[in-house]
Length: 291
Image (tube, rainbow, N blue to C red; front, side, top):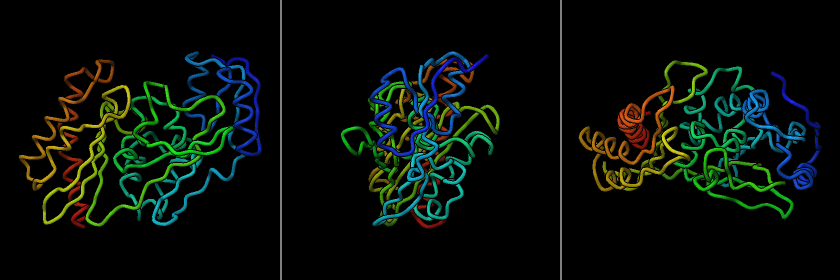
């Protein structure tokens, strides 16, 4: 199948890219790494009259740290993020999440900005970014503003972005002392396979007890789901095997899975239960400095 007929644009600045998006509106699509858009165009899932390539926007291809905040440009290839010493030092769970997704060739092309903007429920980087309390920077014709990562995806393949707006950066705040995070993912095979379910956990410990916790579930709802009740269950308690099992069961009840070729609704709930216990256990180990 062909990609269809469209006009290709390659702006040299973010402002020019935004202006083109405003001009062409819903008839245009932004092209980052292309690992989602090109597949959608070839399959016929998506059809546009204009493709606006962001390849020439060098300012969106940087990773830096400013005042403790990890700043990741939307066009940085996923493989570069996973391999970055800055990412591994400041938030290693993001590196973990990326190395479990797709194959190396896909990670060399795909971007974290694209992973967010495609808005598909099985995207792997949004849940761990949400657990980290990350924000995303949106640039548009009216300037720049930030959006909480947890509020960016509104529904499957629907985000907060309006025509002419571009996600330009993901910001992960400095992580306090005695905190840790983990991303656990299960797929039917290793390599380029979509997640059946995933769980991102973030915890803070004090005196051996969990004082704060965040849990986000992937591939089991229309957007990254916050397992609020399971996280509340953890707070004020020591991370015993029994507590982690109970939190896993609660997270499974909070999931909103569907049945499809990758697994039934109940199978996905079972996977969430196991992954939650694993994710919280590793997050606690990291908070204690054991990893």
